[in-house]
Length: 451
Image (tube, rainbow, N blue to C red; front, side, top):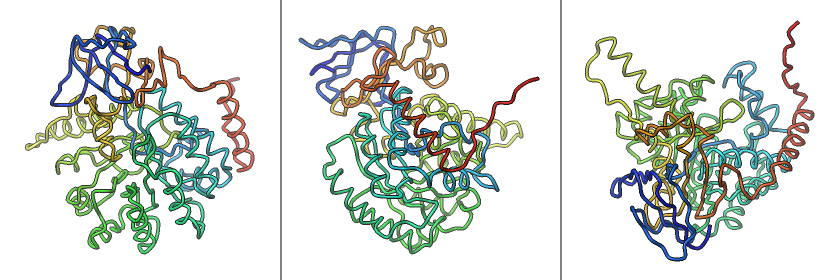
């Protein structure tokens, strides 16, 4: 982008309730920030982008994705979370252990460019591939190269006992890469959590995050493991705070859900994953009833598509289905139905909040970073535009993502990714995939032939 860029005549969804949304308005970007949002802006010397047939809105925010799995896309679509053949045994215990740093790097790049292509401007990379310090350096390099706004959530390998130097690596990484908060990358810790480690280990890891001032993002309430009541024990010791995002939460007790809400925590739901892989029923209504709105996340591309359109539609459909079922059963006192605006905010505003970045992104507010997307409104799948918010949440998909900007820099324009050699990326992705498959001894599924 030029020093000044004026995006003209778009349908502008700021999602800032004080500013409002516009059927026709302009967005002025100066450097990395949004300078103004209003109809009929003028900016002498600015580059002008005609958005007459576009919806202009904040970029989507993904609050939990195991991005290193990019080279394993769709490899486990039919594999559940638990069981003899499961995500835990197959992905984390068979394929992950043979990943070299360069495989994690390419996996991250594939996932990140796929996210950008789908209109996601901010991602939390829940990175539990840190078998060595070199793995951490490799995935951070990919985050830097992508140009995305990202939270690097440093995780521990789930298939073996962590290296005794693992905590020291985290401290070193914090000093080396995250000494400033005025950058695209920020830091979090992704501990396995009390359901998957001894309580004393969980406590020590949460203390480590707070020692370096990093947010915490943790899986809780995950399948049968979530029924142990261990989060409640953490809560009773005063360890649950507002610096933590809780992922899934599907099998938590009501007491534990109340603790998350009461301590100011945020949540990340991956409803398609949770429903399809057997985590448990996504607890969206349990949190809404207590006044906590969720953020959304893709989770695993081994099983799921990489876009936020899928996430929005799933959680919207689920919540309304549950309420309509109760209505058909003639039950009273029903909660409010989610609206299209609600779920769009889950995918933007609440995502920014859960990532600790609401002061920088999530709305088109002057002074915030210019993280925005332009969505084509002139394609057959969506024209004519009647309700712009419903058009985004229900009518559009990734083909409508025309342009993506992060901190004022164009990462996608006119439907094409910038700053990446896609041919080389594809070559490297297949090379890394083939290495991992060969070393693991896994056989890719054969396509059945018809006689």
